[in-house]
Image 1 (cartoon, rainbow, N blue to C red):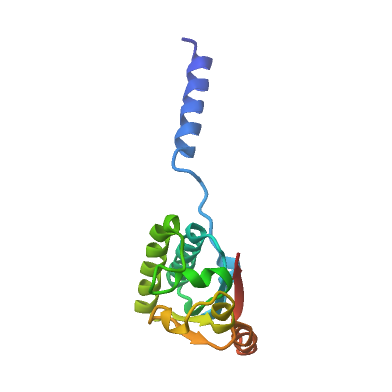
Image 2: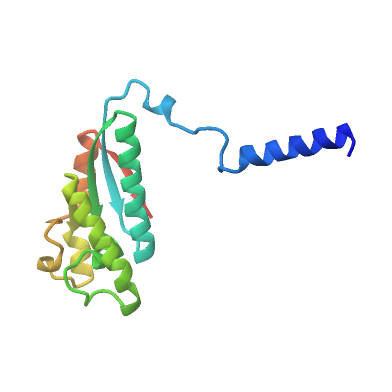
Length: 165
């Protein structure tokens, strides 16, 4: 093997090795988080897909962890409405058989969030439209008359709204 071939092979191996772990560069939000001590966030959760809803709750958790790691105190509210409502009920009557496994994961997220001090609310308008008895919602979630009123009020109090579709 020639010296040129050896150098080329070594360069390719080093390049592959440096890319092996995914990203060679560390990504962060330093610019956005600069001079920020605290945030207030209202997550508007309304998807009809239970697997997607479970994923979104995981994304909310990851966001909370990243903020904490950056030293930013986060006051979080999760508002359930629309079709997401049927997955935060005690009874399984509102979900299809094939949705029950994802619904269980969603209920586990709700319990974890409550343990972390996250306030969660459910829109009564959405419950009424879907014929869900307000007493059927998980006890960790407070039923409010209107999530629209909540979103308006929380924004007026400085909460950022993040829509989870």
